[in-house]
Length: 175
Length: 203
Image 1 (cartoon, rainbow over the protein chains, first blue to last red):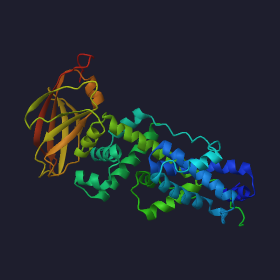
Image 2: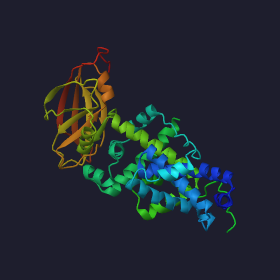
Image 3: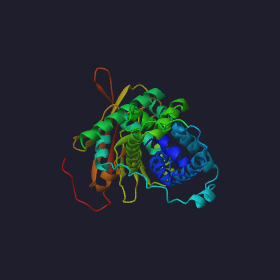
């Protein structure tokens, strides 16, 4: 059943459809939260708050075009992240009303072989390894790395892309 | 209401892994980022791939912060490490000089500052030798900036903590277009072991 079909059924009062929408959307919302909030616990908060708002809107039939559920969810994520940054616990009343039992566990995070990753990083060219360390140590921008390396931001991005491609190949070859 | 759409069983246009990493790093323009987020909100296949990208990014961050890599770094990394409360051991012998050094169990980062005139060098290699002249590792074409006046090299803290007392020679050379090497600086590190372990390594 498509997301849009589920949205229609929720408007008709189908609680199983609500559970299915939560199951599908929660991992996607969590990824958005990880990207923008940089914290697993904040991302979990975001999942709860967005799902509560979504269910509220779907139950009330406020989603006029059900096939746009993804865009509606994304918009709700954006607004909620702004809210979360403004006040951390603004939605507690809604959470208390809906509870958090609809929120599924997040999908497992893939596990990397840390030792193999270290060996693959050590096999990179010197500039690639430096760019990787500068990028991930403190999420330094290409501009900051470019200043240190005496090259352009574009070149930093090219080196980073090449390094990550080489790393992925190395990790896959030794999986 | 419009009829329900088809179930998305697969992804016809998967997002490139490099693009997903740029998205995760937050370096994309908003006009590029927005369609990616719309796609991710409806595509679990690409969501799974983003999770793999995040795992790689987290692994690299942990590795970068572990101090275990042999790598040329910037002052910014050293400063950030200090701000994060990491314990840093730095040695800066002058060109042609030497320094007595060690590492303790609670050190997090081991850094060598190698002063040299890099202003006329296009390519610089950094080699590490034993005191018998055996080259242990050559770091070819290291990143340099001509006006930096020094190379900051992070030595593996993991390796240093297990190392017996020994002497390491660092040699910075510029390499010209014909492949000829010109010495920029040589630096001796006399390491004294303070953490218990085997007496010597065979090279």
